[in-house]
Image 1: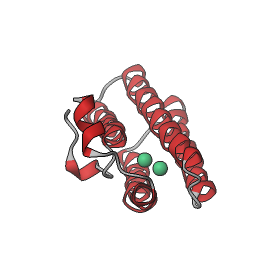
Image 2 (image 1 turned 180 degrees about the horizontal axis):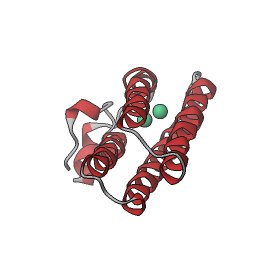
Image 3 (image 1 turned 60 degrees about the vertical axis):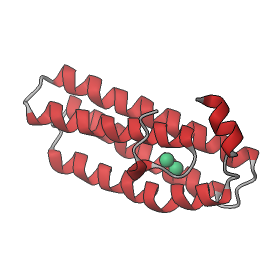
Image 4 (image 1 turned 180 degrees about the vertical axis):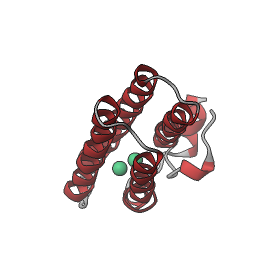
Length: 136
Ligand SMILES: [Fe+2]
Ligand SMILES: [Fe+2]
């Protein structure tokens, strides 16, 4: 498992998905920095969107299963972030994507992770050591 503690919320499966989302932000930034063509940047942004959608779906399923009281607000933030990610995709295809736009969406996503995701993870039951060991 290559879970980076920085993105961990104490639930291994979610840590992995968060790693993937933030790695894909880096891929978009790198594609921009090296002056990639629009289609390569589009692929990087589309991959980021898919990773975010999967991560959000996993969190939302856990929140529903465990009747998380902050679920509606959390899901609204996911919807807002997804809208921002689609705005990046649209900008790349029309007016042009900028590092500032990517940085702003990255910051919003990181803020969500450090606040909402961690709050939710503290509420959810943590996997037992036994269950964790069985997965490895
Ligand atoms: Fe998350
Ligand atoms: Fe979340």
